Length: 404
Image (tube, rainbow, N blue to C red; front, side, top):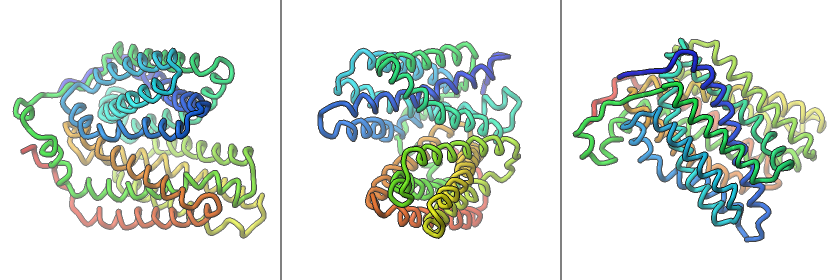
């Protein structure tokens, strides 16, 4: 397999990815503001479904696409398409155009995310990084974008309106496409003529038959479900259980984001010879922090509880970043490079579905049951980490069978 990246472009590419990640958050915030002002009932739920469902349904085809085409060229194409669609949405503020555009972006973001997963080992190797460090750098970029994006997006909407904010977002994707194209980043694949006649299921069977991969994805998906339950309850934990307001909400959110950035930096210094232990261990820690919050709130004063939750959020955020780095590293090592697209697609579909179910479950505890939601999420997180690790270590590593 030929791998290419022009000298001197690697770090520029990482900076551009940071800007693009901020752009992702800008589009989410901007579209939410635009849709929230629409008088049509259920406009916001329609937007959320449009942002999640099409990409989720398309993941099996996306996995096949990334494994059968150059992921570098796919990333260029999807970034250009993102820029065009977002620019079009900037000039068409009606709800129908917003929902249509969000549906297309859902698929494009899924393709771009899967292609990026397949390109991480390539980019890391060309920059002289170990695989864990490359994933840690990308996690730091993602965390920084998630922290800065809502702030930048809110400011852009306040100053120039949603249309101008979307045009700036479109420009960030056009820049990403130009830099990826100019960098020469490629992941060429060898196309087997026999694969053209195989069914979609038969292409995924070698991955699905690998019990270590299925156990790790299954257990860690349970961890995502547990975290999603707590995510929904978070606002009620602050406003109802802690009887606090927007300032406390913002400070606690910053604690989590700060923990994630610290966790990404720390992960980059670790060799992670056994990333599975980090992945399952970090899920257990996240579960333990949720459980501690659920049990610990109410024992002290409101100020004491806020400090306690803030400390737990810093620890949980750091564990979340370490988890993301370890999971990507583990999946990239367990699966052959020719199957990275399919593995990423399976993990994305599983975790996205778990997130949706977790949000629905967490909603059952609103608004007065936030503490119980955190206790449930904590227990499930600890179970996912400990039981998943026991099952994973009970199976010896084996090479993935060749396609039938």
